[in-house]
Length: 401
Image (cartoon, rainbow, N blue to C red; front, side, top):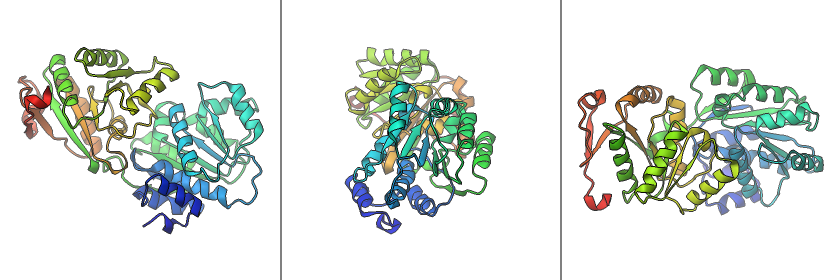
């Protein structure tokens, strides 16, 4: 299927072509016709599969089809973080550059007076984080009563952040028979299923590149480590491989992230750290330098990495194995985006094995255990060592230096 077959306006087709896209991704092929037909949609799609354009293109088409605009907002897009909200705005601006819809951004980290001024001037689309927008609605400073089209993006993350009640309260203020599209990287877990069922009881459900199937373009690896020093040696060796062009390293706690960034810097590896204690300006600056290739490694916690747009990450490295399968999906989805190949590495000490088994159960597969020549584990108590087939990766000394 081509984009032309989706019956989009020529201006939208031109914008899509200018972005270098030749044919729709599976999630776009499945969802765009349904959204254009006015159906409620519940879409499960992995990070990096083109889901933002999957709802932006039909929204722009709906705006294009309107001969007269009242300049009252008709579309509401809810995102869990400010970073993701701005990422969505960027996609709308890129694909809607000929029609130029007016957008009101309602997120934390910005002056409320400036946001209110944009709302007062009128807009077509509101992009918001739930808490900030609900605050304005409760103070009668924002009116959602005429909204006709709602997108809830990354619903699983919203629930992780406790935003479910805010979303429900916002939707309760809309008086129209609005169309709803909910996107989530995973629907695993009773909470997400109940949330989706309550909001979209009659939705068309689309499972494309779902969490436990997305990884065809991502090579997943496990390296066993005896202790912290061994894990650090594996980390630096992997980062220094020629095929590692950029690496996003995840840690479960901010103290560990600081420790890892300091270690990499001591090895003359260009690295920066981001975690929840950094303000928005610092996060943006550090991630901008990483995105532009000025630093090779970004060490992050899950909180700091939510919603970051990092399109060209060659390696995701779990220095700490995450506690849950859905977190693993979000982390690993940062590589192998838009059809590119990626590598996801898990560095596993004995205390990480429970988390790894939980992730493998969530994924429905056993991840391969590899060895790096010269850095093989020596510990005899590592249970995974005898239970999993291992493969030795012969990496020359020159490649590691």
